[in-house]
Length: 324
Image (cartoon, rainbow, N blue to C red; front, top):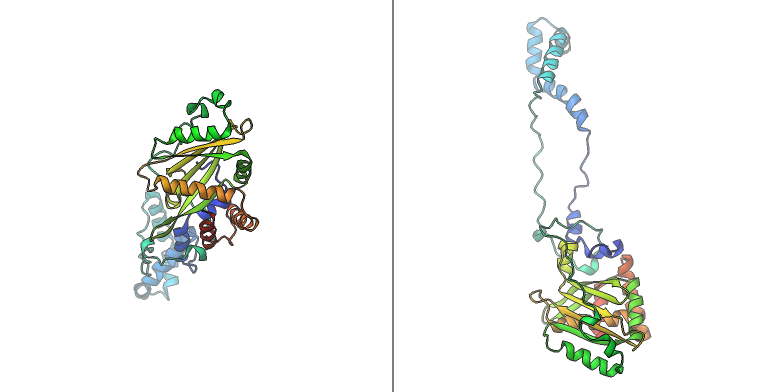
């Protein structure tokens, strides 16, 4: 699922919490060359720590100061250092005089920030999952549902009726027949903007954001995968879509129809009615509408695809309410 992801779009999809955490970075921290500290800093610290005893020892030996004492014992000091290096026993580490830094704040402790006030975050890698990446089930061709050769002899209105009846018995299935002229606009837009997000209204809970991705596995097929944005941010390519939709293009030229079929997976938190709502919303954003509406929706698609910081979820919600 991740192979077709464009980097600008991922700026919206990944790392909201990572952006908050970056606000706690200690910008005053300094970086030192540890090799220099290990070879040069320690003798000076030892001398300062035992200076009083060394001064007393120098006076006992009738010497002027610590420097003269070090000169007298220079050969012995070099021998001991060499012996310590050869034995592989490093000197005991010195305890830092500074207190340990506090632990990093937990995500649950961070203040919540409105999504509209955040600039698009940079992509961050998802946590390593324990399962394999999501692989969509094998796609069924149009001939798996109907006899294509016999269908070609029927008028478009009758084909649409047969297609709806073919899927009426499954409570989790989605189906539609789309005029070729409308689908052409949808496909052109989808090839330019293969990823986008759509809001799903929740009664008394605002709206839930879902991530969609177009793929074109063959000349006669175009698919759309819908995934909870929260799950996609967490698991990336390992996230499991809750709704899959396939457009069959076999009758596009001879009958002027594109037949759509899809399925909402049970237990994924989305009902068939909500899956249908997302499909309708997708068609409104990717298809044709009134001139002003088309301009506003294309602008949102462009901003999302390019990672434009002007993209606002509030505008997306407003346009979605008008679309369906």
